[in-house]
Length: 111
Length: 240
Image (tube, rainbow over all chains, first blue to last red):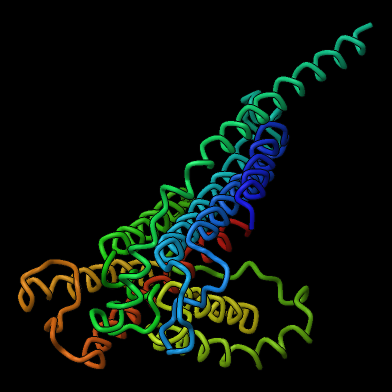
């Protein structure tokens, strides 16, 4: 896959971050950026005809296992960051009564 | 008149945003031109030739995660621990409670779903443990199998809606498991003289080295499953 396509995924995430009016949409735009970066890294060590990085004597050449190992770290950290930010969204909703950015930035407590 | 002004303002904002994104795109493309020359496949060749003999793992991703780059994986597990603590801390309420009652409404869950969840639950649990234990031979490993086992536990919440969970016990055992992971990886300081690697001697056969991989995969899998379970209970408590 062409790396330029992964940039386009990342830029879609940036566009969503800049224009979304809802916190939860912002959180998911961050995950879209993250998946673009994961695709870019998996693309790096990949080449035509490379087998899976498991040595069972079938493939003569394998794709690079190092980016795949690094991306496991990214996926785990990304999921925890998503969980943390969604929990913050819940707390903001309890405090300000809305999940729209415009309402939250007004800083009016709801009772 | 005002609406025309607003339209113009929005158009200006959109233009600025799109031109900034276009600048980023051009910057990315220019920086990527040299990247294919930067990348070298020496590391891949080294892993291909020496990986199995040195670590005992046929799955080279596991070999890198649990042997060559174990320091990275330790901090990865640590970040999971910190994030779980953060979720628990943010979701803390004023009233102290020991057990978490259920938010899931029994009347809204379809009977068909409950029946099939009962059928699927043991299969998912066994499949998760298969992926954890077989992580050094086939695709998978501690993190992936732990996530699967956590999914099985979450299904349990739909089957038995009156169950109560002791969250403090889960959080404490997760921290203890993290300490156990550090302890297992530190044994190599005595046997090999190097911190954070396989504790078997370096000239042992691949089957002996696999013992370490299975132990570490099991510990990491249990830790990840407990961590995701804790996050889920925090969200359940929030939705009540």
